[in-house]
Image 1 (cartoon, rainbow, N blue to C red):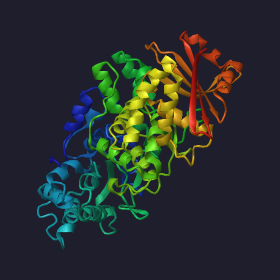
Image 2: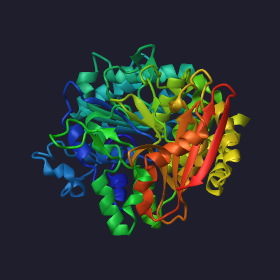
Image 3: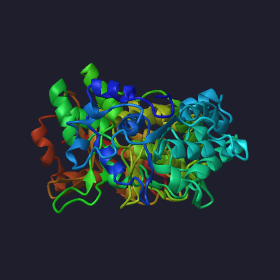
Image 4: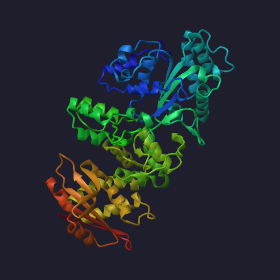
Amino acid sequence: MGRYVNPGNEGFTRIVGEEYVDKTGLVSLFDSTLNGPRNLVMVSRPRRFGKSYAAQSLAAFYSCGCDSRALFEGRDVARQEGWDANLNAFNVLRLDMAGIMQAAEGADAVAAIAHAVLPELRELAPGAGSGASNKKSEVASALWDTVQTTGRKFVFVIDEWDAPYRLAQGNTAAQDAYADWLRSIFKNANLTAEVVAGAYMTGILPIKKYAHQSAVSDFDEYTMVDPGQYVPYVGFNEHEVERLCAKRGLDLTDVHRWYDGYDLPAFDPAPGEPDHVATYAPYSVMRACARRRTGSYWPSTETFEELRRYIDMDFDGLQADVLRAIGGEELRVDPYKFQNDMAAVASRDDALTLLVHLGYLCFDIDAKRAHVPNEEVRGELRRAAEESRHPRLARVMRDSTRLVEDVVAGDGEAVAAAIGRAHDVACSPLHYNDEQALRAVVKAALVAAVDDWACVDELPSGRGFADVAYLPRAGTDRPALLVELKWDKPVRAAVDQVFERDCPQVLRDLGVPILVVAVTYDVRTKEHTCRIVEA
């Protein structure tokens, strides 16, 4: 039993010894690919989404260096007939590339892999790799020798596969050498079929692209853009969270607001089944359960610094998009040009696609739109915007808290002035030409309202729709807000329309005051006007 080659099952033993949500069905799914034409699998996920847990379970299941039957009996994987045919039946090479990069001090990952792996391979096959023609092929040669000696192929479990790209940005020579090493194992006509039973790689980013080809093109990729059949293993589903909340006495509605929102496309849903799967951030749900309270448990990592850096770059109006997303707007995104490299962000679509992979946005592959999934993420985006080096963006974020109080106080003049300032950041003048654009600006200006209100677009009400409604959350003493927007019309017309259509009637059962917030924009004067009345 080694650290890298044929590891034990202690890691997974520790995981299931805690409050474990059974995700061993992933083992069944991956197991079905072994020794087949699609046996190379890459699953990318944001931080906090259980990537390392999955890697630990696979290593424990396949490693011939331990006996894991008792760990898996009675779990989801064991419900499949013949589930144990490959249990502890393979050589396993498990690499945590973040740890490897630390050992390499952020430089030569390939040399660090060889330094870690070769001694353990040579314990199984003395002299393994000694016939290699050069240092670059030494590990591949040693793997071949080990298979010939032991009679067992390898299952590769590579966690944080993208660490050399994230932690050694700018060192393109080392990154290219790492890509070459991956190809030497997984795209080698003389070795791959003989040595590799299967490979499972996971990380934050999908496999890096060079032009339009990935570094290791034979892998099937499952990402936050398109998770495919791996969607049940991205995070927790509704039923799993219901059980956790019932056990821990947490309010499911509150947990939903804080950690849900990753609505991912269901893979081959049965007739009558939903076409999207409500997915929760696992780390945050478990932290909330442990502490018996909801709140932000988003860990501080390098991803926050990256987020702030990309917002400050402001590609093609990215700041306006982020502000609008915080306010509840969906954003159109083309995710297919991104090179899957944090150092190669060159456009608005690249930046927004990266935010999808980092978990700050959720992408709807059918609508080609992204949105902020939940309150925890919204808070992180707000913090990044508030700390922006761009003073106009930071001012809009600071203004928003004051603006909310001005709305409640009925100060229409102050509200109109704040919306005007948000206009300069949240919408390009070239696109500020209709009520939809005005809606985006108003929602961006009111980003702070999401703390105490739920925002609903086009709420059916009376004999029409309210443009935007803000419904007070349980436990607050806030009024309900009905926002009516008019383009190039007097503010009185906006107020009159609300009452003519009896829009407030749908909110009367809430038992709270109702404020009508009428906002208009004058094309000629370029000014906003706001009037606030109680319904």
